[in-house]
Amino acid sequence: MEPLHRRHVLFPNGYVWFIFVSSLDIMLTWVILHFGGAEQNALAEKIIYRYGLPGLVVFKFAIVVFVIGLCEAIGRKHHESARKLLSLGIIITCFPVALAFGLMLIHV
Image 1 (tube, one colour):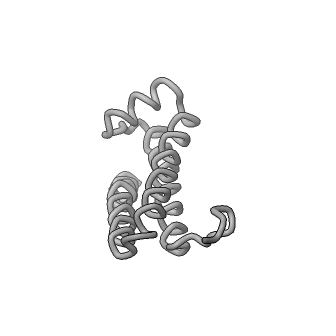
Image 2 (image 1 turned 180 degrees about the vertical axis):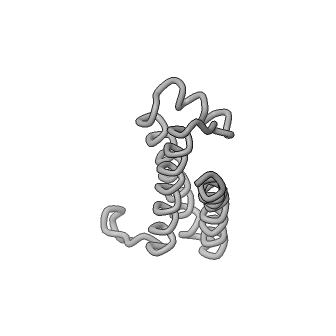
Image 3 (image 1 turned 90 degrees about the vertical axis):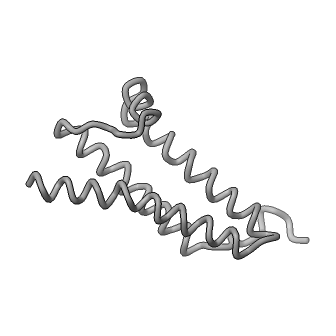
């Protein structure tokens, strides 16, 4: 078995998309908050109130790292299940991004 530091990730393209959409979520959330909007996720709202943008970034990317780690762990034995989990994560993360774009288009 290959050492852990030499293994290739299972879904490199999927991870890039997941990180990209998660980054968009952070950026658009911050733009909407800057213009007087409100965070709808209660936990994220508490983190933003307490720690600001740095806290939001750490919170979001902790979730990203957790999901990627979970996909890697599951994917070693159940490749298709891990692929579906990653796809679901990308789709779920797209909802607030699409909503934020929609809100910005309405108010511009």
